[in-house]
Each structure stands twice: as C-alpha cells, then as structure tokens.
Image (cartoon, rainbow, N blue to C red; front, side, top):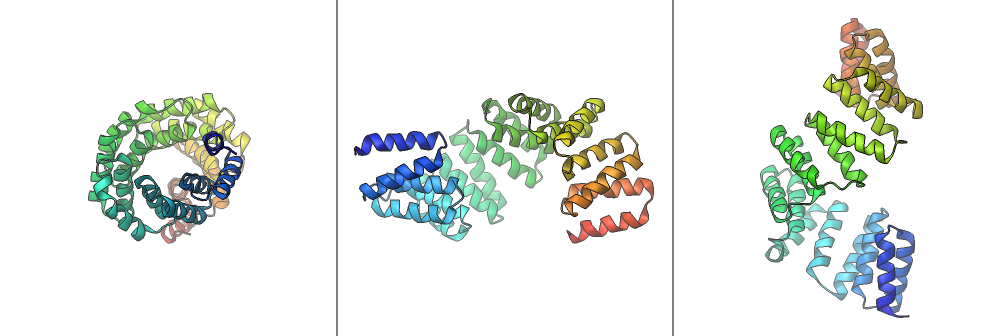
Length: 307
C-alpha cells in the first residue's frame, strides 16, 4: 500500500467532488499512516463539505497536533467561523498575523470576522486588502459587493461588481447566480439579465432562473410580454412557489391590473406564511390601490411583527 499513490488517488476523488469515496480513502490512509497530517486535513475538508462541521473541526485539530502549519491553522480559523466560534477564530487570527498580513485569504477571513462583529470600517479595509493581494478571486469580489450593499454603499458595490464579473468562469453556476442577484440589488439590470441568460443556457430546467429573469424585466420596466412568458414557465414547473406567484402578481400590478395582481400576491402571502418581507410589501401596495383596508391593515401588521 503505497502512501504517495493512494494519497494522489484520494485527492483526485476529492477534486471530482466524489466525497464519500474520497473520505473512505483518506480514512484508510489515516489508519495505516498515523502521522499523516495531510490525511486528517483532507478528512476535515470533506466532512465540512458534507455538512459535518463539528467533526471537521476535530479532524483539523488532529492534523495540527501532527504538523502545526500555517495552512492548517488558517483552515482551522475557517472552521471555527463555520462553527460560529468567532471569539476563538479572532484569537487564532491574531496569532497568525505576522505570517498572514500579505496573504489574501488571511485578510479575507479578517474581513469576515470584523463584518460578523459589526466592525464595518475594519471589515471594509480587510476586504480591500484581500482583493489588492488577489485581484482575480471572484468569490471575494462578490462577498465584498454583498458587504457594500448591506452597508448602503450602492455606487461602490456596483463598480466592484463590474470589476469582479470579468473573472467569472462560464460553468461556475453558483457564482454566476450570486452575481446576477447582486446585479439586481445594485440595479445593474443589463448585467443581471445577461447573467441569467447565461444560466438558462447552462440549465434550461431551473425554474428559479426563469422567474428571476422575468422579475428582473418587470423591475426594469422592460419587455413585460417576455417577462410574463418567463414567469409562466417558472409557474408551470413549480405552481405553488410563493416567489413565482408574487412575480406574476407584481407584473400585473405594474400593468395596472390590480384585481388580478391581488389574486396572485394574496396566494403568495398565504403559501409563504408572511415570512418574506418583499412579498408583504407588494401585498400592501396592491391592497392600497384596491382600497381593501382590512387586508391592508392585516399585511401591515404582519410586516411590522415579522410573522
């Protein structure tokens, strides 16, 4: 049983996202080669990917006991954050400061910690440092844009998003989708439209893409006929989805067909249980137009109470 060959095989499985098989191989390696910190490190990564965050933290601790490296320590910080142990993560980052000051990932983790603890100025500084040190990392651009939106820096968020999308890879659906959502939030409608179009070319069976592109066109006041076709397609696939019903209702609202808008949006509120604030805001607008005072008060109370 050759360690080098088997570890390469296990790593290949890991890279292919064949997590169960990769985990079996790394567990075998860790049993046969007790001092393999690398095996415990990858077991930690796989367990985290599979949602076993506490077990992942235990495994990275074992890796550090065998070989106390900066890489393993930094991954431990990430897992501490994943396990919501922010104080421990902060202390660990402080210990690693001398090694990590010029590491983009270290700066990114610092930004996340400061963001989580409400220290926006420091979070902003570390987000920028992270991107200065690694100017092609799409995920960090998108996380920075999200941070800027949350802190009401819309103009900067829009500019950073436009820089970041240049580094998107064609088949990276997760980041393309996130960029499209952020495009909507920053009112970069043309960008968001082009990204949803790419997503639909990659997967024409996803109703969320149809709905979001349709809703985007409604918000932009552009090509409402096409928007209707897209939302109808989403509803064909998932007729009880409150978000899709809300989109259709909002389209009718924009067209001035308020009674029909109310049918869809009231159904959306009913199915959603009043959890989605955006749907409730739409319901309030519709009932105002129809002068339905009882329903208007009901939806206002739901919005205020967060029910």
